[in-house]
View 1 (cartoon, rainbow, N blue to C red):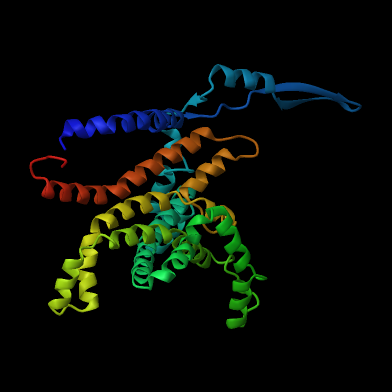
View 2 (cartoon, rainbow, N blue to C red):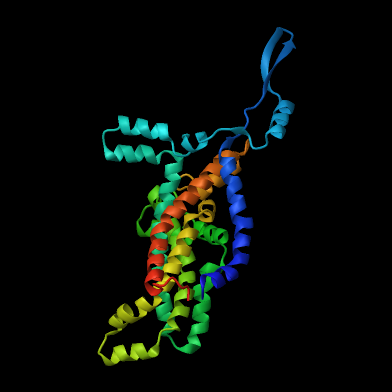
Length: 348
């Protein structure tokens, strides 16, 4: 397929992406340079039996007029990006100048909201993604080798974690790990510790969320790998068996290389999906021990008094930048493989 034919097929998708992705993303970038207006204050004189005194009130009408005149807010440039709630440039400088050990530096940086959310988001992405792929691959290999009569029920049961919505699944597990739940009560009995709680410790909270993420996401790589296993040339497998290759050697030298393009695809999709972890944090009520970039955006937009659109927009832009940085190695490897297979530049 030539580049011209390829782009002709891609044109409708590119237009849809421009309308529904590029334009909204552009508006978010613009919003990130603005911050909310300050409340307009006015002085009023309150008089009582003991005299009069001046008090300060929020002028609601003047504030609304100000918002109506400039709905984006007041221009703040890169101020929101650099403040304590995001990159915290000044705070980082103070930390590096005043701390004497790496542990103290890491601890103080972790207390900054953006870096705390970024730390959990990265840890979750880099642990849940490969482990979910490994579990999915193992399940696919097992299902591929069981009798045909059992495949239907086993495939259905294997897909259940992915069918259940993340919020419902996390709520169910949240109740199970509660002190009165089956998992929580069992762990207390095993360790003979009635105070043991998976939700009280930051480390155990992280482990619980990551285990849930693996359980929830594993069916997707399972389906992809299972479909890929059906395309493996049987002649190649039989030749390997005739040559004396063991089962592990057939998996290592035939199955895994054949499934490598699917692995790259899964890594891209799962990394992007896991990087936006949000529902399990809400479902587990884990905000005290684990936050993510997506949760930070939600928290900015869910304020009881003011909705921080500028802060949410800045976090969104930083999240997109992080995702791009995360995907660059995978995309570069994919491009190198494409160039090796198509040295003349043809897409066919």
